[in-house]
Image (cartoon, rainbow, N blue to C red; front, side, top):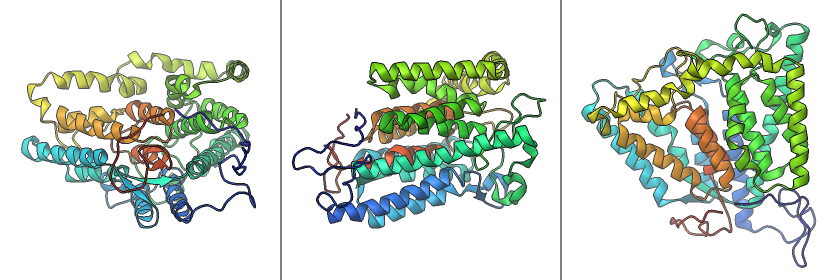
Length: 435
């Protein structure tokens, strides 16, 4: 695993000094090679296209019917991939390509041969949505850091919007928030998400949704992802404090749960001084949360795991129960209920592996998940970030909610750091070296 680079890096003899992103300071050092300059620009543009798609355009889609709406982030991700293929230095790994075609072909065969009912649109989305994860692009460490810094900065802006929404709500009422459900026609909006939610049902105070996010849970999760990136790469403590406060201020449990499951891995090796400062910071935030009544407002949700039909139960308990029940069917090994046939009503939030196995069968579903995990950890720029993404996608993501796999692409799978073993020149795949 890579430790963060100290900022600024000290210059050794013969090595030009660099800034906090690893770039030579202006007017110092040797000029970058033409190949690096050629690759850096297109990859940055491709990244920004995807980053804007997964944040500012998260709610936007197009289609003639609610069930047929295509999220705008999908064509944006495909466009970004095309830009990278045309102008950057793509890397095609044999394992990625083989596993992708294997899970798509096997899923298609089991669907057409054994499923009584299935949705062609659902299967097409299943195949297209994960296609961009097949390709990666060679970049320098500095370019990778610039991309991650851009995402972190986007989430600083999202956190600022979140706190502004709280101020508006406390001052004149949440009804004065910009509301995309009212500003845009329904044909341009992705349906079936709780865009405006009360902090507690029956309460006239709402959870801030960041305006551009599908619902508050996505805002909470994306802020947690940005916090993970800060802990692994930059450790700018003012941003860490901002993101921690923002996760609590969403009043959504998913971002906080993601942090609880991944923070020990994300922190890695930390000095005693920084650990003490972080502990003191969390203690202060905890006291403020108690004093402001945050604990009382969210404590009622702790029993949702055991309450049938409750949100937490449908997110984290029912997906497991359905997997166990489905596996008892002797035909489940090769046959599922059909693409797009799993329940969509109430509070159902199926884990990706649950939906893949139930709709396509155990073998096709496991092939999909093998593809996803291999792609995520294959030549991962940072294994700790890949781990966080794996936990997030597995337990809080959705198989066909476009922002989930595309965010994994954006924050990990599209990068191969130049100069590491397994990332050398040449178009053929080589065995990855994990650090």
